[in-house]
Amino acid sequence: MPPFVHRITKYDPAHRDERGYYTGAEDTISDHGPVEEAYLAAVAVFAEAAGIDQLEIREPQIAGFAHFGLQPPVDGYGLADLFPAGPAGFHDGAVVPIAVGLELVRAMLRDNGAWCRLEAGGAFAVHVGWDQYLYIGSNKPCATALARTCALGLFPERLDASPYDFAPDDAAYVQRPADADFWARLHWTVRVHSAVFLEEVFAGNASRWHRLTRDNIETVRSRLVPRARLAVWPDLLTDVDKAVAALPDEGLVEIVWEDEDGQITSTVVDETQFEAVISQLAGARAAGVVSMYAGEDLPLFTAVLPDNDGVLRARWQTEATPGDRDWAFLKTLRRGQLVTGTVTAIAGFGVTFVDIGGFTAMINVPELSWRPFDHPSDVVGVGQEVTAEVLDIDMVRERVPLSLRAVQADPWPQVAQRIGEVVSGPVTKIVPFGVFVRIEDRKDGFQGLVRTGELNGSSGDVIEVGDVLTVRITDVDPMRRRIALSQQDHLRPDQAEGPATPR
Image (cartoon, rainbow, N blue to C red; front, side):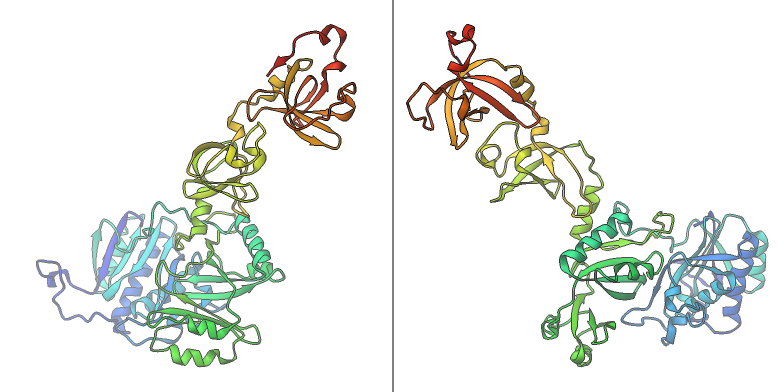
């Protein structure tokens, strides 16, 4: 709110008791007449004094399931004829001329069902509160406007701030923008699930539903209302009877259904209206039930549309889902970063899963160790704390591959320096083209291949696993992690009589 804030009312401050409560005779609803016009005139004179001829709609909302106002509900929530494109024109960030802004103030004074903040950057703002309390903020003192407001029979009072200043639900929450990563994630989700539903909330309690497929996702995207809140839900149940069975015994729910023509309808009802809505589902080809209570029936993930320049200016927040929390955590990671976590599982196919701050990352088999092993459990165990390097952050599949070996010293350069050494070691494996011999005296020691042509042809013994062979290291390829060996009697004459060096 700009610095010069005034509360403007029809209530004479002289008619307040010691606790500040109004004790006069003025009604708390609009007179739909001269007093209401005085309120609108006050907004106009303050806007004129501040040099404002346009206002921006912020955080719009309309009446939801029930109407709690003191006046009867109005069709269209007082928005009729204000937005040529229909109610969807009443969205966050929409810029309207002062004349339309004044009509919005009128609708709010009458409690017709529509509400929003009206702003002009940091220069001007209008908030309409309960019981005909109006709050105007300006970056100028506006002494002339104050005098004219008094002349209109209203009472302006200077305040430090408006009680309707915007405040986020959670100041620490990082809202996911519907950016390139979001749409890539959504495309991937549609491919995996064949279809999903996109809930588009363009104002509080006002939404449209879209069934997304591979063929229409970009078309739907192009028609979304600016700054809309988006929620991605699993596809509806084609078994409508199951959807009906999912209705709770009582409570507030949103029922969404798709008719035979593909038209999607949603309505918010409670248990007193279930029977009437169920009758409407008779011809539906798919339906779903979503709880309206916080923390229940969360979507797969959510986002808010940024402006065309990519900046997220919408201030409202979606209810965080597990998918949203994963996204927020992934945004804190960088390639090459070291993370510490706990091994939670070792899959049958070898991938090791690690909990890093509530997110499950994975270590593929080749990234567990530089050294050979038979099974991942030879390297790590469930419950073990490990430190690993982040190899990548896949924002589409929301995966984080880690490397345990990246934080270990690479032993291969040292192995490469051993070319020409004579070593003795056990045969670990026999293959059609040769045998593998371990050249280090340790369970995870490196192994080299003695090809059939490099075996000692003078020996008539059959080689078996476990036999100890004396060999020479003839080549080391660190890139392919391969070691070539030759049996002892292929050594140079000056080496043949030398002692074998066990490793």
